[in-house]
Amino acid sequence: MHKHIVLLPGDGIGPEVVSAAKRILDAVAGRLNLTLTYEEHLIGGCAMDAQGTALSQDTLHACQRADAVLLGAVGGPKWDDPAAPVRPEQGLLALRKGLGVFANLRPVRVYPTLVDASPLRAEKLQGVDLLVVRELTGGLYFGQPKGRFEENGRVRAVDTLEYWDYEIERILDLSFQLAQSRRGKLTLVDKANVLESSRLWRQIATDMASRYPQVTLETVLVDTAAMRLVSQPAAFDVIVTENMFGDILTDEAAVLSGSMGLLPSASLGKATPGLYEPIHGSAPDIAGQGIANPLGTILSVAMMLRYSFQLEQGARAVEQAVERALAEGCRTRDLGGSLTTAEMTDAVLQRLAF
Ligand SMILES: NC(=O)c1ccc[n+]([C@@H]2O[C@H](COP(=O)([O-])OP(=O)(O)OC[C@H]3O[C@@H](n4cnc5c(N)ncnc54)[C@H](O)[C@@H]3O)[C@@H](O)[C@H]2O)c1
Ligand SMILES: CC(C)[C@H](C(=O)O)[C@@H](O)C(=O)O
Ligand SMILES: [Mg+2]
Image (tube, rainbow, N blue to C red; front, side, top):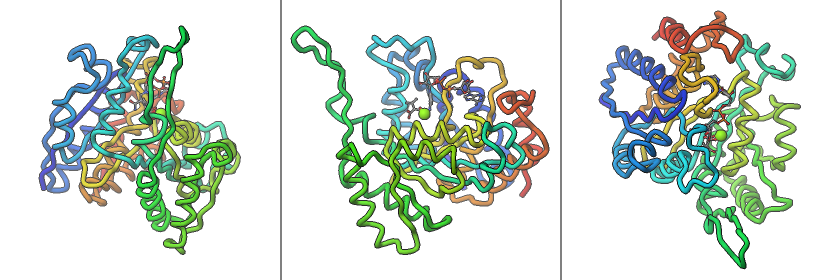
């Protein structure tokens, strides 16, 4: 089997974690009769500097033609001027929209060996294994109108929270299916006491629930959900939520597992290449030092093997190698250890077994 992958290392620690994950991909390919070819493109701040745009049409087209896309991170203080007309993050949003990857799967696991890396007590963390399904191509990030408007000598800044019924239906349908294949519980997180869009999410979810009798649907307001994520995290199975709530809640959930550097993601659409990226950002505070935790990106590669290439065996091999490395005490600095990015990657490579 041959697969073509576009690598988008991006900014900050992005190139460090993407090159680590590529080593894992190559090792898996060597064992599974998989031939991989790659092409690398710029995205984010580095693309703005070199090409004057955060995502060129050439790069987007290359991604659309690929079998899968692996992204590091974009952004950083160099491009943080709030008055600037273009931002690195716009490149990422244009990529997600251009690929049509509306479902962002962010699994959150707690590794028994890492409970001391989490601020929560060990007994609260027992049994935590949840999946956040974040809607990725709608909501406040994309709704129109958006922008700054001058009126009567004043400046008005507008972002619009908008969802179409079909956007809600397709992500809820996927979430019910995922819940059915897991522990059978789906939590819709919304703000239906205030937002019209949330009320439409709730109505569609409640109607759809009758098609999935094995799944129990619960609805939780986002402020309560933020509290429950730390007070009763093991009670969640699949959480489905709109774009911005999902962004915020997954950073919070990352704390359960011990570090932002651990969480992977898969962004999927219909008949489009999957986009795989860790949930963390460009981590400017540690960029260039070779100490970033590569596991979020390595676990994203496992998701690529599973969802884009249907290579469950390869996905499990990578996940088990990560589990073993952690269980045997391998830790980067964010987890209280001293391994470099390359050493942690070596540790995973050494434990890859088929
Ligand atoms: N998908 C993306 O490309 C993405 C995601 C989030 C933030 N960002 C961008 O990244 C920039 C920095 O954002 P931020 O500082 O708020 O968030 P961040 O995720 O980059 O960093 C938050 C904290 O987590 C740590 N961290 C993150 N990833 C790590 C890893 N792999 N190993 C060890 N430690 C890690 C950082 O050192 C930092 O202390 C901003 O420009 C933001 O817009 C990009
Ligand atoms: C960089 C930013 C646009 C992005 C988002 O908000 O989606 C990031 O925070 C993420 O979680 O992937
Ligand atoms: Mg985020």
